[in-house]
Amino acid sequence: MKIKKILRPDWIKYVPKVWILALATLGPVGNKLFAPGTWAAFIGLWFYVLCFRGLCFLSFFCLAALCVYLAILICDRAEHHLETRDPECIVLDEFVAMPICFLRFHGHFETHGLWGLLLLGFILFRYFDIWKPLGIYKLQDLPGGLGIVIDDVVAALATNVLLHAICHYFC
Image 1 (cartoon, rainbow, N blue to C red):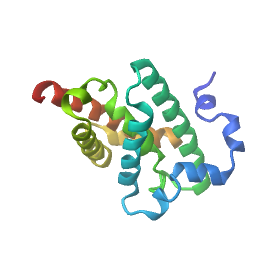
Image 2 (cartoon, rainbow, N blue to C red):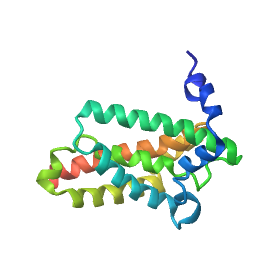
Image 3 (cartoon, rainbow, N blue to C red):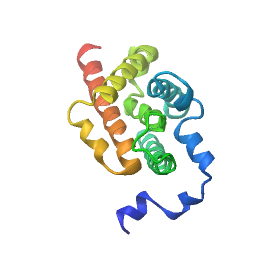
């Protein structure tokens, strides 16, 4: 199967435009709030707490992969509808990437405290997402929804690695 068919399946064309835009912008978050990416990441923290925290690695990975895949499809279609390359109002990418910051942290929360790690993860993720060091900025050049979402996923993975290093050496 061609990669293009995986990233742009036919069924996504039949999802109503209003649903695509509502999902891609998280309703009013992307259109009405100041610093929409930061708000989407904050809501993504709660998404992690409510849906991911406590899952085993395999369940966490599968749920995160499904969310990322759907976000790529939705963001790709939203970009098509808005006729703009990676518009600021699309914030689904920050929302789905945020839980990835805490991959394999199940035991650390009991030892080091949930709220401190969530706050540190949020700050680090926003740093990596906004400044895009380590070549993360180049990932935005990938086409469509893949370019919109993948830089946030890599920012989340960088956050995850740094959080694990901090917990290992300082906690």
